Length: 439
Ligand code: SF4
Image 1 (tube, rainbow, N blue to C red):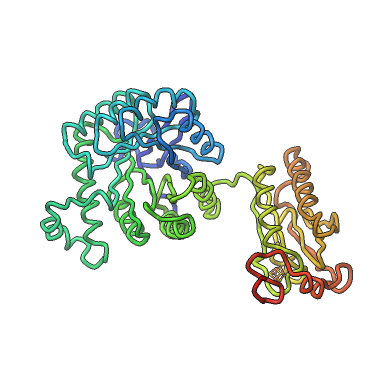
Image 2 (tube, rainbow, N blue to C red; image 1 turned 45 degrees about the vertical axis):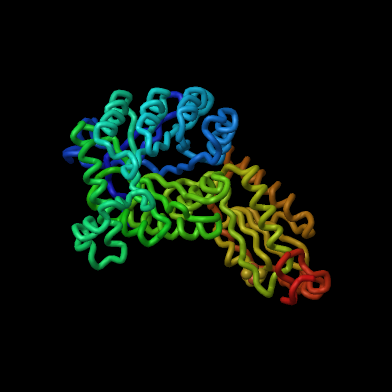
């Protein structure tokens, strides 16, 4: 894991929403550290998302922003394609408690209207707002209100089709050996050209994005951009598709970049409810150790031919309940048998190991109960809540005692449930205990 790249920080929000810092750590004597007071620390990587509904339907938009904020979004972006959308912003801002970004394309006046309404950040697209005088008006308005701007050179909108051949010839040699060389050259050239307008206006509160649906281009483009521009990077794979494939594309690209120290704020994009973008973005940061986990971390065995309860259903139910009830970052393990379960659950604060349609429950290595399969969920949750109370009161510490469990004799205390399991068939929809297709 590489240390984070230093950048010039930007600040998004106000006294009411709280201020989210993005990036930081630029050397005070760097030419682009102009106007910053002292040395800045590097902020934790933030999670962004975008509302899926129309901004001008104020009540629905506010409800969606509240939902995304509750799920853990640090910043929420809204589209403002029409004047009725920017007209709705003032009311939306008064009813929400998270920094709001206005996503502007084609019409620079939408940016001016959004700034006037009090929005906390603007996203501009150099591919469709190109007139220098218009860009200057937006920059000046942001400067006056101390609002940062994200410059997003997405692959889909950055191509200047009218001079594609000329640009390719001019820039093609720069990244000649890279299969994405042409597109990377276009993105970087466009950024240089666009940011010159900002620098000429003495404006430096900038974030950059360079999204594509191609994860390998995203990795290469952001890597090259991070070497050239000391501004915070907003990472994302755009048009990533449905959640299933979008998750893989996003995690590969964003995970690789963040492991290399690149990236200051992320947005995962799905053709689905944006709440999944927030949940998966947070989980990615927790998994990489980039953010301190909020809530329980669930460890579950992958199941195998030794499984002794309907683990797929149990894991899903436990996951849902933990999300609802547990805010302390305890480790909880759900294991399908007692043979390898204890080893695989090492480090868990609360664990259950299944056997013969029963479960034995441990809290920090101490066996606290043996219950029937139908009681596992409730008892496990009760133990987790009790443990959470003890952590909060300072009676116990997270991860204090490692799981050190001598597995019970599967033929003794728990017995072998194999035959019973095979006879009654587990509740999986796609799997049966004997491997045959479900009826
Ligand atoms: S805990 Fe048991 S059932 Fe689960 S994968 Fe390990 S050996 Fe298989």
